[in-house]
Length: 417
Image (cartoon, rainbow, N blue to C red; front, side):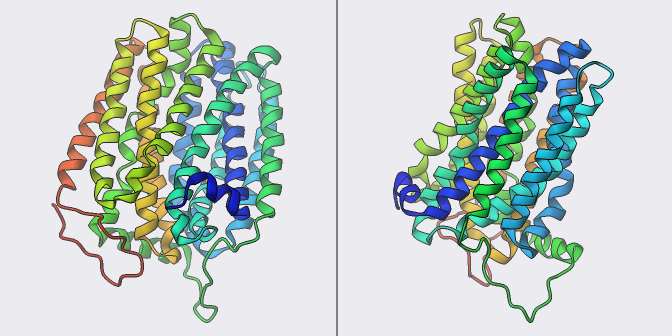
């Protein structure tokens, strides 16, 4: 297995794909963190922040089944570039959010950004194996898995700092610049981002392509297990709704809210890099996924009982160390199981389930955020994740990922159910 740093230095196209994702993820936090502080100030309610988070994930979940088929039918490079430009235009709408009366514009803008991300994410995930050699795939996944965490640290930290020092609208301007840069960097990638298609075979229509992918997933217990694993962390994601409120409880303000998101990103960054050796042993993947889910939930239960803000930061780091590991392990396993012609749709289904779980969790938190203590939401979300992890591991106990399944005509393991 090539070392992660070696993949970046040797492979120019992977470096550009990774760089574009860094910039896209960074722009996201220059929007979200200032909004989560700005909207409660304008409206006097925490509900608006929860609705922004729910819209950010819920719209993606609804669109991913369709956008995954687009990622398998059309040029992934053009899809990613168009998504960057569309998100850029949506961010411009946030400059009009100046009062409680204009707060709904934030939901419109976030909704439009989510549409763009719904097209970008499956295309980028499906493209990764095409820009690296097979021997480099595990190391490339460890690096790519760190992109979100890296830019959560940078974006959340700088978003909080810039918003506090210069106001949220300067943060929005930074996001606009980032998205423009991402489009340019993506255009510079030279390797094709999908395997050649047989020109004599017409591309299936979106509905038929989606049905084909769902049948593929439904017939393979290993794939079913992998596309449901991220939902555990997703169902616990309602904890993000109380981040700004926690910062208020501990008296650390907007900088504290940004720091919470930054520590979350640090955990997501470090987890995939530290746990990269697990990728060498496919038999460790399923137990490792169950362990990562459980640790995430226990971390947030611990946050609920923490008397000190520094301890809160440590526990948030631990939870997202586990969450980031969960994401990369499942992505790596899926890339080894799914052929390229179906990869965009399968990854779209994977992300759809995860983002739907996130949206449900955040909407649930929105219902209670103004009615119950923050600790109740933290404990509830944490315990839901722990229970899901236990149930998932029981259901998958007979499965094994000792060997990748790509290219095999039939990988139908016995269904543990």
